[in-house]
Length: 326
Image 1 (cartoon, rainbow, N blue to C red):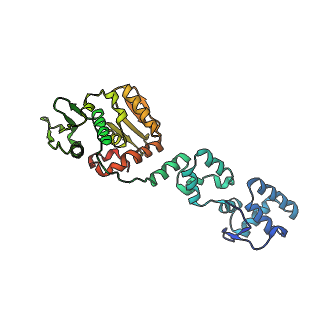
Image 2: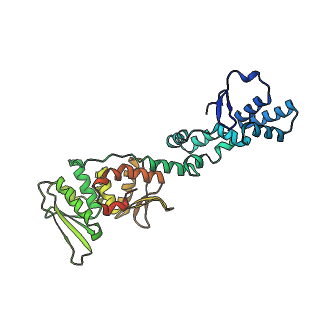
Image 3: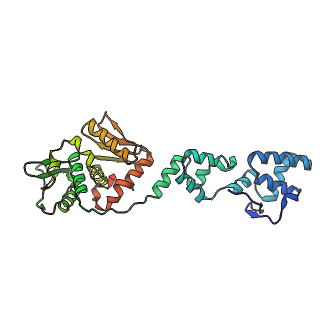
């Protein structure tokens, strides 16, 4: 905060001082300089006032409190306290190093508890996470079939909960009955991708524990024949959303470890997903113990939702909203 010729009103509010005060040598002017100086300069100014006026340190503190209505520490905090919008800007546009560097220029009485006073959190990481959630910004994507999107969806479907029948040129998708609406949504989107093949059927299994959808996909039969290890290269953001709804897991908040994960068939596919996410700026790791690819950093989990999932929330049935950040 830029310091100018200012003084504190009896209530501790910062006000402008009129005129050049460098010529004044009253105790009041010393008090104002003590309040407005850096930590080290303030200590030196207190000692100087003690010598000039022949008083004790206790008397200096007492006079300042009676003149301006509060303890010296609080008066200094009021003077140097940044505005909330400045703290928010420093958190959003900086990192922990730049924030600490800026906070170190403030008096200790100000820097201590700064994030708690302005944002209700105690650490920079928590502040960054809170502001990221408050500022989730996304626009709804339009599902506009084209060769690139169609291939991405077919790749995601094969990597996820669908299987291909090369002989009959059709896809089979199976979900538990609780996810019936997601199975039907996929069928409807496939119908838009392949309007010449609207003959899809859907039915419950005999045990009524699963729901199956069959859909013809005449085009791109080459996608049926590719090994699954060759499919990741076709995934675009839409395919990532589709695959996440099929085989993804989401955990966030309530004291839990933030997590985006994808179940994968083998390590090769897992490492390919890790490499794919890296091209989007995400740090993912393959976990051999449960054959999954995981993204764990809070801000990366939030950004992943913002970039790949939230733009398709309008197409995602309510039964799958447990995988979407609130």
